[in-house]
Image (cartoon, rainbow, N blue to C red; front, side):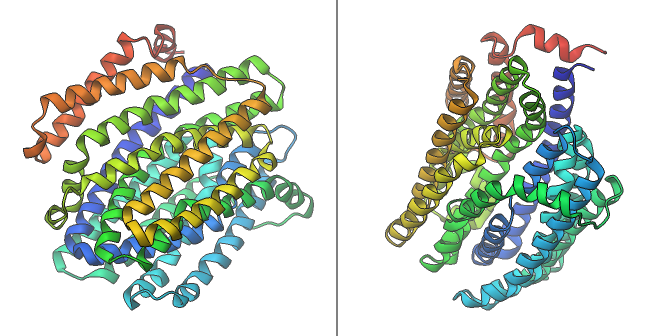
Length: 478
């Protein structure tokens, strides 16, 4: 099987799987907003925001490092995987174990602190997933990961439906979230190669040498990626936090496609770079830019046009009480461009071993954005938080682009990106003109999304964004 077809197969598996997982995830959010109400959904956003901050702070880049190191030659893959898993287990246990105690220092309501104690196990399980996902990425076996994710989402939706039907309330809902995460992790652990606890001195030394620059950058990432969701509840009502959190949850779902694609591409980029295959490296570099923007840019256009009905569908009747609830989602969607660039070129910097040179970007971004959060949030609330978040993503994305291009000694072509922007803009205009957005309901929203996807697919072919040769190669049987 050719490399292009292998990439396409794994990407298609992930796209289909992620589409199913995304629908289930949005259904779960919709159930929670309706079952909990706006204020208690704000509690959920605050609790998960805090745990995500701890999770990113202690992430250390294990997913990317696992995929990268397992793709490099001259390393004992089994010993490496076992050591990576052991160190991830120990670090996650330490930091997520501290979370229920650290939250006591914050002036949040008691139910939020109890939710953090319950869901810390969920985030511990999610942390372990990093090793299994990194393995699946390096082996191009993403069907395994997607099956586990969908299984967890099915358990989540079924459990939340039971909580809503029986009116069990806030903390039982948090328990269901935890159970779903544990089942997801348990499935990956069961299906992955025999993973055992092991600490080998020499292998650990190699891991630490590779991981410390990434770990340092990720620690600073926590401040600008999750700082808004920790600081915002200190200055605004939980209802505002709920609105901001719902918008950000949609954004998180949308941008997962970028991590998904780069998870497939990075092992291939590392393979070419580590073996000095310059032409192959440049092709994979260009393909990474084209694929990520191919998926993310049209989503920006769709969100801008359909923001209000999306928020009404996800949030339920309570969100209709907000004046133009889609406005914050439209505003935040600008950050998607920065997220796309940060994802692509951040992975490239890691692939060519330039994490150390990227440190100044993450450190300066964390400092500037944290200052912006404390200045803007007290004055402008959720829009101040969104403005600072947009700045942080664009700043990191542009900085990493210049750095990666400089050290790779290669500047990818942006011709395809401009075509994608054109196609996305035309799609957005058509949807806006054809749909009665002021009276749109759930069925019309679904129809608009399907219509937009069809228009975009047509424009991809009409503008030759994807070549005929690539399509034929993917469709070949061998």
